Length: 298
Image (cartoon, rainbow, N blue to C red; front, side, top):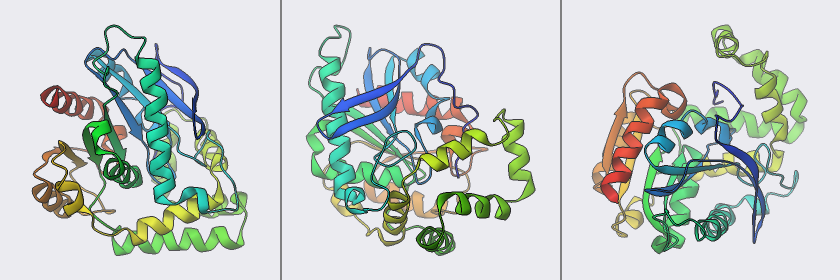
C-alpha cells in the first residue's frame, strides 16, 4: 500500500472532479502547461495523492500535472459488485476521455504546448499497465509514456500470492474486515512510518481504502497477475518511453525493468534510495528526472 506524505494538495494545486464523456473523475491539477501537460495514473490500492509531492517541482519546471483517481479508486466512484467497468480496455478508454476533457481546457491557454491535444502519460505500477493499454489504443494522442515501477507483464510470484490473498478475502469479507486484517499483518515499523510522515493515525489511508470499490480491487488485482507481455507491441509504436524505478523492487525485479527498457530502446532512470514508489520515496529526484525526459522529448 502506497503511503503519501500528505493528502493535502500543495499550494496552487486544485482538487476537483474532472467531467468527461465517461463520467467524473477526482483529480489534483497543478501548474501551467508552459512546456506541456502530463496525466498521472496511480497504482493498485493507490490514489492521485501518490504523486502529491511531484506537483510543485514539476510546475516549477513548466509542466501542468493532472493526477487522477481511476474508476472505483478512492474519490472516483464505481460499482462495488460489477467487475465489467474495470476491464483493462475500459480503464484505457477512461484515460482517453480524461485527455479529451483536459484538452478542451487547454484550448483556452495561450501559453500551452498542448495545442494539438498530445500529452505526456505516466503510470505507476498497475497504472503503468493501464497507461500502456491507452497508448496502444491511441498512440497519436501521446508525446511520451513513462512507466514508473511498472514491468513488462505479470507481477512477481510473491506479489501474486499477496494479491490473491487480498482478492480471496474481498470475496468473503467486507472492506472493514479486510482493512483490519491488512493492518494486523503489516510490520510495526510500517505503521510507525505512517505516523512519522504526519498521517492522522492512519485515518487518511483508512479513508482511501474505504473509498475503493471491492469489484475494482478484485478485477485489477486479477489483471496484475495475468498481464501478458506487450513490450513488442509498445516498441513498434516508436513512442518515446521512460522506464523509471527505485533501486529495489519486489513487485517487478529491477533487472526485469532494465531488460524491458532495452527492449523498448527507452530512457532508463534508477532513483537511488527509492523502492517501489520513487514518486513518494524520493519525489524531488523523481521530478527532476521526469522534467529532464519531457524536456528532451519536447
